[in-house]
Image (cartoon, rainbow, N blue to C red):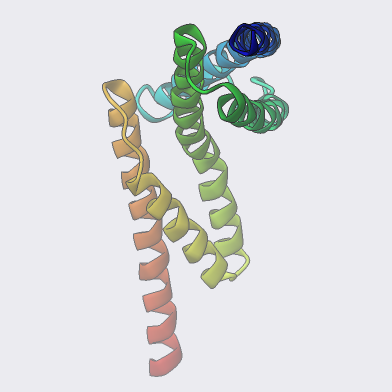
Length: 194
């Protein structure tokens, strides 16, 4: 009698857990798929812009035309929410669902690529601002911003035309830094020889 009662209770608990799992999964999965799609769309546009800017040297759309800032902000916000929900889901239910795990992995990979593309998408603006700062005799900030950009670029890994674009961007940042150093050397020489 006790054994059948215990068995019935365990079956009921398992049934509730399965229903709870399905309910949570049905809420999370469409949102994760939507976010993955939005990530891929913006990433593709950023990658194309990057290649057009640093390989073809003819950007087709500016970052502003892509509504980059707004879209990035929304994606980052949504990703943080879903990352938290995914963690809670996994703590509660584990990794029993292959489709859910696959979607989460795709989201993670897409977000990592997106973050790398954001660095290169913002690089042009960083270099332009560094030039403005250098023109205002704010040498330290100009050189540090370019150096910081170079450190970020060293950690990126791309393939194909994106790798060529990255190589060209790194070369441009190195040239810009060399130009700043040469200009400073001339100024220091003038100061100490004058």
